[in-house]
Length: 164
Image 1 (tube, rainbow, N blue to C red):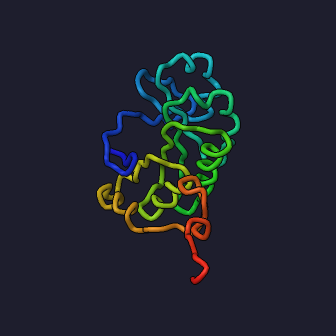
Image 2: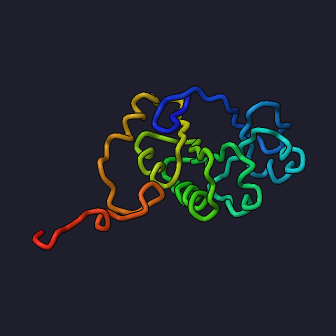
Image 3: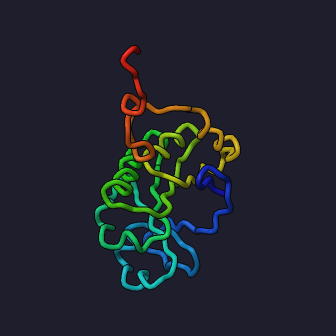
C-alpha cells in the first residue's frame, strides 16, 4: 500500500533495488543506473518507472522524462533532504507531470513538505502505520513560502485593505 493523491491505494509497482539485476516483466521502477545501462531495451516498455538516489542528477532524464509512468526518489535516511531538491527540479525545471513517488525512509513528519516539493505518492516505511501517516496532510492549514504546490507566498495571497 502507498499514499497517492492523499489516499491509500494498492501499489502494483515493484521497486528493483539491484542495479545489475535482470529487469522482470510488469510494472517495475528501476534504478537510474539500470535505466542508463539498459535504455535501448527498456524504452520499448509500455509502463516503466525509474528511481533516483539522492546523489543522482535528474537532468540525465531530460530527453526521456515523458517515457516514465512514475519517477521515484529514494530517501536513504530521514535526515537526508536532497530528495526534496530532486523533486523540485523534476517538477519545475524538467516539467515532469507524472507520478512522483518518495521511497525509502519516508515518515509521517516529512509528507507535508514532500508534497510541497512536488511529490504526489509516498511509500511510507513498512514499520510505520500508513493510516496514521495519512493524517499528515491535514496538520497544516496554510504555508507561508512559495513552492511547487503553491507558487505564491502568503503575503501575495492575502488582500490587505488600506485600513488594515
